[in-house]
Amino acid sequence: MTSELQRRLEEIRAQGLFRELTRVDSPQTSHALADGREMLNFSSNDYLGLANHPAVKESVIKAVEKYGAGSGASRLISGSLAPHHELEAALAEFKGTESALSFSSGYAAAAGVICALAGKDDIIVLDKLVHACIVDAARLTRAELRIFAHNDLDLLEDILKWCVKKTGAATAVRPRTLIITESVFSMDGDLAPLAEIVRLKEKYGAWLMVDEAHATGLYGPQGRGLAAEMDVSSNIEVQMGTLGKALGSAGGFIAGSKTLTSYLVNKARSFIFSTAPVPAAAAASLAGVRIAQSQEGSALRNHLWSLVGETKKVLRAKGWPVSETNSAILPLIVGEESGAVQAARDLKKLGIWIPAIRYPTVAKGAARLRLTLTAAHSHADIETLARALEQVQLKPADEKKTA
Ligand SMILES: *Cc1c(COP(=O)(O)O)cnc(C)c1O
Image (cartoon, rainbow, N blue to C red; front, side, top):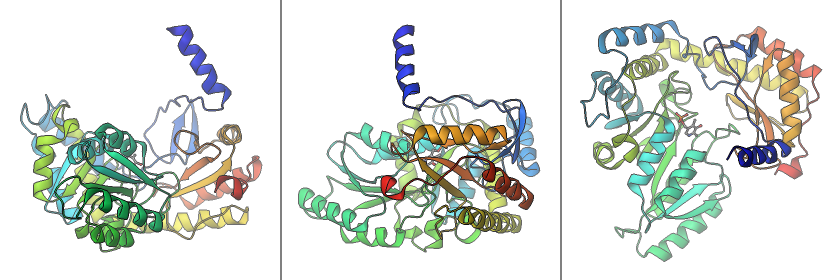
């Protein structure tokens, strides 16, 4: 087996797609000890800087003292620990839904809910750029898959018309049509036109699931998400979020009706057949939600958006196409895989950590440095970044080629 796997790895290497882990010997914060040296970290999704926040750490320590380290079994088997219930009550209140259910990861949340809702007789309609966990789950359902070009409402409507024709009346019990999109896209940082998507799903009688992994904690009143900002939350049947990005720890959740979460407790296999997250994770996430909703949360968001504005100015001055959207994810699309890897390596030598993102995470030929900012960064960090960008070979891709 080893020689066969070595051959496969060589192929990956030859395409410039080989991946390796970078060991970090410090907390995940803006200055991380990576590969043995201090690096200015622009690789993390810890957008509000909560992963190393004193109040979050304090909650974790208290939860460990009170509930111990492990969670024993699946929540249906050995009892469902109080910290999970407290977290879910806080998440439901935060999202303005009747109920919420937490999972061990965002990946598990997507797998659990999608496979519980759709089966082989149904149709799942996806934006081309949705996260791998959604694609994997959709495939696992054996439902018929239809993909629309990224944020293309005309194509979405064409597909929905086709669905209605195929499935009969929009009100038919089954087959069902489930549309799934993200609100803030993970590798491009751009936003979905949620209001228009809601209008279409209502017109054609489909269900809608929105993954707010990169919006939770950042957008909308008190960081409730982009759906809340656009005032369409109550029209979205399945609202998904993660606990490992702006909320600072790890895990995922689904927010919606009490009927939905009760159905998931009965049908979501990644919830039923998996040991519950440790109580410390739930306690950390609960502290994260509370901070996101507080005065401090809005101060952190304001600081983050001011850093984003400043960084965009730096990038624009260097000729990078930068969108108007407020987003903590700033992709520097260089196109070729090996070019992105080399640039990331050169920046690392200068103490700047911006990961190269390549196929299969993004399309072939759309390799990029994915620069993310967090509230733990300072204005001085952005100046350091600007100086480093002067010193490396890094040019925007030919737009026609990556479009
Ligand atoms: C990170 C991410 C997930 C997965 O969440 P994890 O908690 O990391 O498993 C799901 N969807 C999107 C859009 C993501 O970016």
